[in-house]
Structure formats: structure tokens, C-alpha cells
Amino acid sequence: MSFDVNALKYNEAGLIPAIAQDADTHEVLMMAWMNAKAIEKTIETQKVTYWSRSRQSFWIKGESSGHTQELVDFRYDCDQDCILVVVRQEGPACHTNRRSCFYTAVRDGENVELMKPMCDDHDH
Amino acid sequence: MSFDVNALKYNEAGLIPAIAQDADTHEVLMMAWMNAKAIEKTIETQKVTYWSRSRQSFWIKGESSGHTQELVDFRYDCDQDCILVVVRQEGPACHTNRRSCFYTAVRDGENVELMKPMCDDHDH
Image (cartoon, rainbow over all chains, first blue to last red; front, side, top):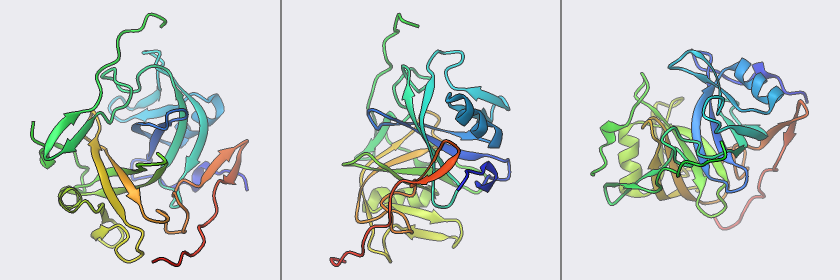
């Protein structure tokens, strides 16, 4: 059956949450939002493209930072209201320069930092 | 620093998205929603507890189905607006009896089913 971008369910702002997972390490890297057009762009270009709610514009991940996400697999869930993009992540996914945005754990009631920012790399 | 459930950011309905990831296989199992009280219950009981938007009630995952999620690690992201629960999943996470809710991929424009429902098991 052909994929129909309009068969997915969007919230009142026309957005659907998208989880990015690293294809190799299987780390959950980040969660951001897409609209129907961002989904089409992601699938067409294989460059993961979100909708920035703060800037109200398309956000081709890594376009300015170089920390791109190459699409490896596009999946969605049973309720058609959440997306999982399996990606090849260049450098850190997080704007804090950490590999994943989920770098804080709660253990025994305390916030614990699980990873440090990556060092500046010289190949970008 | 102590964890403060009120330091997380909730949407206008008082909810925050929560991604569940399998502690052993690292599969992304599902995404659902929590409110502040569901977060507290999850951390206190170590049984992952969501807020059911359709039923408008707490949803202790697996309470009726037996397909519980034991909390292994509770994490949140850089923007404090998304949760990652690392879990030990009993049986299928999905209500369709599949291990993960993300069982549909889009490949060459077609919907592709990645996994079948699990067989009925006899130990529950």
C-alpha cells in the first residue's frame, strides 16, 4: 500500500512528533516536530527536516551546524501519530554539542549528567 | 541538583511526550504522554505510568494486559520538554501485540510491515 502523508495524524498546529534514533548505536538522539511538508522533504531528500516551532520555518537538521541527519529508515507508529526516523548522525545531535539531547537522568532524586559536550572537531 | 518535576515543560494540556526504549535491545517501543503526577508515580513505583488522553486517566502500562514496563532509567532532554524512559518491557509494548508500535516503515513510497504480532504466550 502506498504511503499517504495525509493518513498520519497531526495536532491542532499541523505537527507530529518525530523521534530520531541512531542507526548504528541505537541511541535515541532527539525529539522534534514535523509537518506534512517536512515529512515529504525528509523522504525526498533523505536529509531529516523538521518544522521549527520557535522560528516557524523548516529546519533541515545540520544545515547551519553541519550536524546532519541522513535518513536511513522512516517509520511511524500504530496510531499514526508519531514518527521514528532512523538516522546516520553527523557529530552531536544536541545543540549543547552532546551526542544526544537525553543527557540528563534522574537517579535517587538527583539530576545526573550522563554525557559531556563533544570536543570541537576539525573536519567540519 | 535535585530533580524538580515542575522544572519540566508541559503543553497547554499539562502533558509532556515520553518515549519508551527497551533497556536490552534498545528498540524504541512507543511514545505516549505523561503529566507531572504520572512522572512522580513512574519514578516512585518504577512502573511506567502514562496519562491516557482518550480515557483522561492514569494508565499504568500493562496493568490490564500484563505487558508492563519496569523503569530502568528516567531521562529528559536538553529543552526539558521530552522524556525518555528506558524500560524492561514484558511482552509486546504495542496494543496490536507487536513488540514495538513503530512496525511500519515507508520504503520506496510503500508502507512496509516490519514485524508481526507476537504469538499468545502462556506465562501470563
